[in-house]
Image (cartoon, rainbow, N blue to C red; front, top):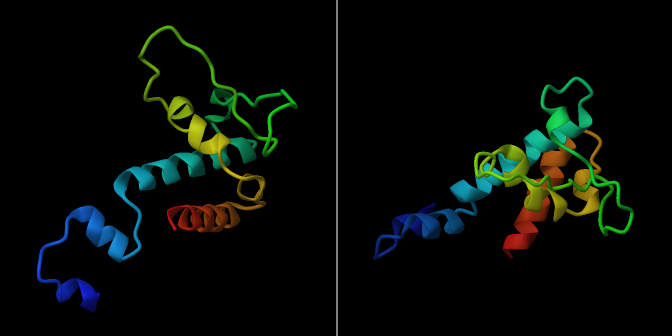
Length: 118
């Protein structure tokens, strides 16, 4: 924190967050969405499990929990979790998605994201 206090010029929000190695607000939103998706796909009693369809196509690379993007004719579902999380979830590596516990998933996801920012 001492390096932030000794700046001669004011840093913007992104500069302060990157200096302290903290994620931005959109990155935190994506993290929340992928955590909710992991819980929905791994918890048998999840009330939102039925919202996600897994892609049964074996030709897709990566992990076995690829989401199938549903098509819709209106923009009502544009900001719904299944549409927001689709690209982020499908781009995750198998070691993150196939975590055994929620705590393990969070740790693996955070490690993956920190390596992506470098």
